[in-house]
Every structure is written in structure tokens, then in C-alpha cells.
Length: 140
Image (cartoon, rainbow, N blue to C red):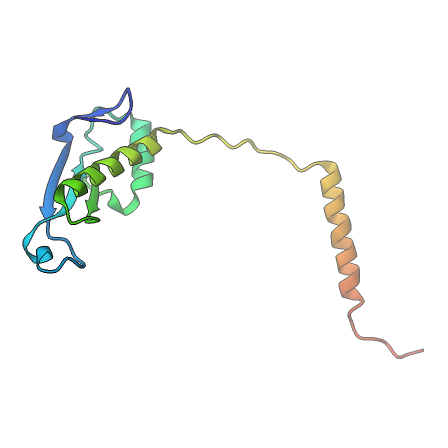
């Protein structure tokens, strides 16, 4: 079991881990040991997540969200398989915690009359300055 919040606890059947060889530096070790972790969380089928949290999680996950509703996290940060597993689980928990926070609704505001007047005055002055930049008439 994986504890996310007091209300959200993920069961083991919702997550599957597979191990592959990491890319990048590591010498001979990188060719022998499968240290990279691919954590697959069945988010769409998870009974622990409310629908609103699932929708926000899908938006936060982006490309990591698969067509069948799973969240796939790949971690190959360290040379230790156990540490990579921990990092993958921490990232999953952090992503779900971010999804639990509902965004505040934006309150539409209107500019004050004074700010509208100031804006129009500066536009008028700027237009006058630009009009004075034109050609000089020599018909005097």
C-alpha cells in the first residue's frame, strides 16, 4: 500500500513495476543490471481517486498518461534499482498530491474609471508625439 493523503491510499494491485537497463554512463554495470524502473499506475481504474482528482491528474501527467488511462513514470536517476523504485513512488505521490489541490476560481474584475482615463490620456499624448515625427512642410 502507498499512502498519499489521509483519504487516498493506493493498493498494490493498482501499480506494476518493470525493470529495464538504464541508458547513459555506468560502465560495464549499465550493460548487465536492470536498474531503470517503469512504474505503471492504473489511475483510471483506481477506486481511491475521486473523478475530479483523476481529471486534474490526467492534465498534469501530459504525455505520461496512456490511452488506456494509466500513468507511466520512468526513473533511471541512480545506479540503484531500490533507490529508483523509491524515487518513482515519491514522484507518483507528489503528482497525485498536486492533483488533489483544486485551483481557485478566477474572479473577473473591471478596470477603474481613473485607470481607463489615464490609459486614454497616455495614448493621446503618445499619438501626438508620433504625429509630430512626420515630414516638415516648407510652405511658409
